[in-house]
Figure 1 (cartoon, rainbow, N blue to C red):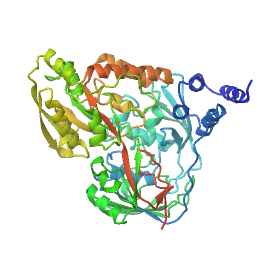
Figure 2 (figure 1 turned 90 degrees about the vertical axis):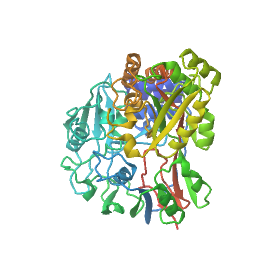
Figure 3 (figure 1 turned 60 degrees about the vertical axis):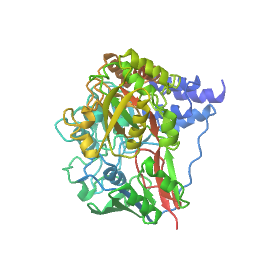
Figure 4 (figure 1 turned 180 degrees about the vertical axis):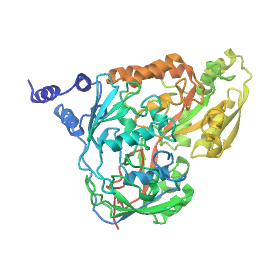
Length: 552
């Protein structure tokens, strides 16, 4: 027996059937190194172990990046936080970028969408994925000196899963994890008893779910006074509407942060942030919209990190309102769109083409053999005629003033003219568009035709559920399809890649046929930094600054 097979055979003896199925997929050539590492890490296998298996069959590791020099101050420009900073309720980038420096998650996604342990050392599912057991890291302290224990994890997720509370994470946990489902086994072991089996649950307690930072069990809602956490930085000062500063945590459990200090400056709009970066007043910005990217892309003093993202714009059509009750009309509108013009023109090539499902090219389980929907005006007109709308129809598209969305709306308006659809535009401020974010009190959820921004996720679960299942809280399309609901349930439960791929393929084909929502493109995330900045991890979730170095 060749040596690499002996190595793999020895490793197999310690693994479960589901874990071994990932190795089977790798050996059969159905997945590559990246997908193997991602799926194995989700199941709780360590990245060094997975890398060793991949290397044993000749799939070598990528070179590690050089570490920067310690010391100095990193200055970041971010949006003004939307209100009092509270990890239970915050939803805006300006708030969670600050929390990411001082507080931590059980695990963290990496640029290749693998999961790296943080406050959890390891995790594993039971046979059907209905219970996930997390082993917690020992020797960790909060900034106030208290030991980090299982009680803190239980309290954190009970807050986030409480349906009677203000948790912003209920969009993730509704139907997945209920209050009381997080249970202490001992001081360093926690079990998550889920409402339904879930094959990718660890992403729900990772940085992908930005509300899921671990807070002390004693937390009373005064986060911005202390920014209490276990992270690599501690609060130095915070001034609402102005900025914040943090200093290196000398008692941090892991590698100590490279910078001595972090300074965050708040800006009400993106233009002042860009001017501050150009002037050298800040070293790094949070992600900038595509429509202003040209301002910095040509600047020799600035580097723009491009991160492939699953963020997108959902163009919904209300399936319970004429003319969109007829799927032929929905298909016709999808067929009138020139996706290459959106990707190459609107996004300047910094996007991936969408195929009218949430399965972005960046997701490993996306079935790329499903035929790509392209512009076909002749077919679109045939569908309109078959639906009794040869003369077209009049409709208002309601959307929000954000990033590239107004430009997308105008292009869609022009595309629709070619098939006789007369679209007028109603572009609103974000607060008016989202309203109270509940049916009957939200232009987003109530409009017959609209475009909505969706932020990046490392797995498509939220995209598949909240806006598309029959009882989804974000179902702006009012799409109700029991077959779809059943396939999504099968996808979410699946622990093995083969089952996930089959369900993903079925979902893609069903949504192409039904077309309740148009997914035209997935824009890259663009993070600008000064040329003298290094070490910023290119992840779509947000800024992690502890390994960043700034040279003079």
